[in-house]
Image 1 (cartoon, one colour):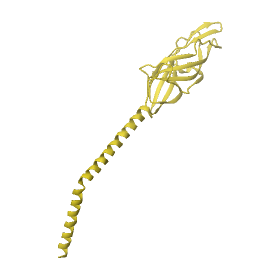
Image 2 (tube, helix red, strand yellow):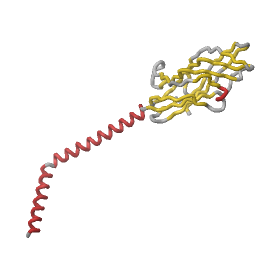
Image 3 (cartoon, helix red, strand yellow):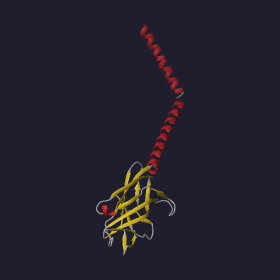
Image 4 (cartoon, helix red, strand yellow):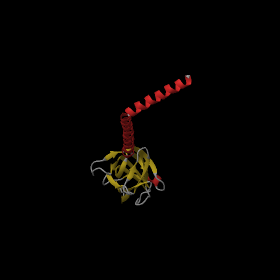
Length: 203
């Protein structure tokens, strides 16, 4: 008799629970839909934030220098100083979108980078594509017959198109850019001129 009473009470509790669920079924479904909607919103926001991070995050650019030793003329050694190497963002205007990399070089011996490029610095940039660099050649010294001479430089600033459509900077990743400097040296009797030219190639 005790077991039967317990079974009856259990059945009554089950019936009561079922009635509560049935009477509040609509509210429960609405609550579940709201939770599902919130989960979807959170997923969309997370995907958007991640995409923005990949698109607009910060990446690194390593800058290298190389010179194939062409056009040196009478010189057996060439030493250049570069300051304010700038880089231009591809989606900006011609005179806007320039960023100072903070990379420079003083008395860089081009004779030491004829076979292999040399790292002169690195910088952090906003993710995106960059299509130009601007070199500021502040000084050039050459060696002729064992004597050093300071060269005249017709134009200190040199804009260089980056080949391959530009260098791509990706968030939290490292990219490399090689600057191939090809100076042309003319003159004699201690009066020399260095006309710079360059090519920039993503590696």
